[in-house]
Image 1 (cartoon, rainbow, N blue to C red):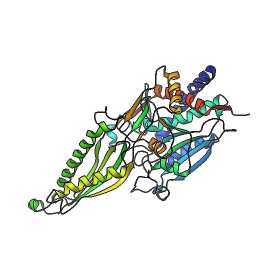
Image 2: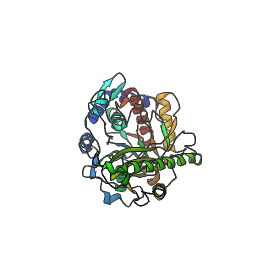
Image 3: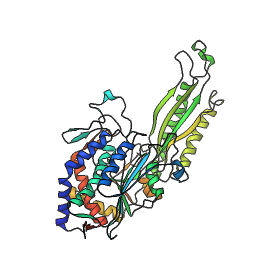
Image 4: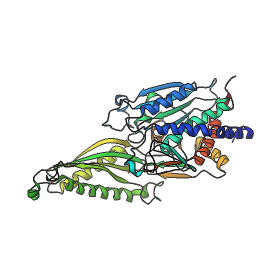
Length: 429
């Protein structure tokens, strides 16, 4: 660490003094139910807090026409009227350090049946070390930490001696188009940090993700003549089974991908939604089901998509009914490739040193079969992106929660990292 030991401790103390404020800010973010298409009120709250601190503010609607020709674009079938990104930018008096993006996503996943939560999902509840609420872990705690880092410097009369962009984006849970829109808009830096809930570890590699919907059509008749009809729901099961077999084949290839060869099941296929039919006494004429599947870093999304389409075609070709009524595959979300954070960057070394200082142990790494916006920075921005954040539980399930003690430690680490990476200067010269 290049910082003076006293200044290091002063920064840690400044984080601690502001931690109650950080938790209050996190609680308020959780109270905003920023589900897809409803993120704008939470983004307004973020905007107002950053503007109040004097940052240069930028707020815009993500527009498909601005990003659809980029290789990192994911197709969408929803309205983007309320898909709002917000960026607050700090600029120093003199650019002496290295620039930084502190990124986080404001969108959260659906809550599911409310009666399966111990308490209302958008009413934050603190019990012991845990803060409960949808989005608390994934990843509004990370957004709160990003802002708290900058606030800690202010308490000491300092600011980063380099440009820092505080990004709050949408669409991370479904397309990645929010982070991509920031890149296309021109936001770049020497490094990026995303405090996703990764159990105080650094993400080394991350799978890509594809979302798609399969449409199967049948021939409706009365159930008394069911043998003469074609049941689209039952036919869908044959396609699902074929996709399961494709998933198994992809998992057999893990030995070709060094970062994933030790995982039991790196490629996960999920049937997330199914609907079909119109009437209990009619043979269903239609069925549609939504899928999510991972792909290894280095595998082009278009190649994986072509393999999925070929699987569905082959299944139909070998089935008497489906051969005459081929299912259709619709791409309706993530079309995102995976990435590897190559070891050896100076940014990683700085984060590891800060982590060691705070936790008194070495920084561990992990690979993850879930999507991360870091792929935008690594694949398309030529930027090392450090995904590193607090311990959380049930981030897409019921009773989502984040560890407050872990959040404090991560905030301390990010503050030390930012001070070293960007350098510091007095707020007033």
